[in-house]
Image (cartoon, rainbow over all chains, first blue to last red; front, side):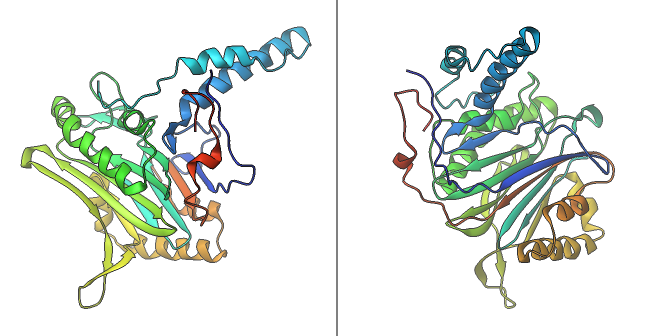
Length: 89
Length: 225
């Protein structure tokens, strides 16, 4: 049992954001909070990025592509909250 | 000073928000996100706010709003209503702690493919809570179904009111963008502030809302639908 994201291949998606400092567009584009049909996407992308980055570092170190670590991703996703929480701390 | 500006076109919605967190006039950080995007069963909305930028414990309302809406697959207006209810009950206590007197949320949206502009205002000192949909009036003052094209909030809105020429410029640009004669980048470059950090969010209209959620598939009780 793990979280899974399924998106239709032809799903129309036309949105974007940009950050500016003064009159200059920032080079980095941090992920913004995003809810898609009740799914909180930022933690999902952060988990995906964490696993991907770890694989990239390993690849750089050893020269061998370690591939996608689904087990590590599943473990991270399993710990994501999955209920609404109105508590404001 | 804080500022949000929402622009609503026929084919696109825009939201601009500053990134500064301050307390009693003192700048604390310039990397907050006072903005989030929401995709629902019947459309999409961009949510931006001024007022409480961060609780005393360090929680940003944008993250909290995501937690409130988590696992609630609601239509746009119901999602905003749910959020408004949570804001009404939870925000005043935290606003009091940091001395924020008002909290305003602006939400340009497409609902069923139609552009809309909503706002939620909370002023605890006056017991005020308002969840409104803003529609343009006819010449004789009667309300229409059309959304007003621009909205602004925060202390910066008062500054903008002193020179309203920006309104026409921005409206023309958004219209030009929707006609295809101005690029997204052009609107972004014109809309930005000249002094501080800003985030600008764009959503382009699509008529593909209203998919049956089941067609997106799911797997197990913890599946992301």
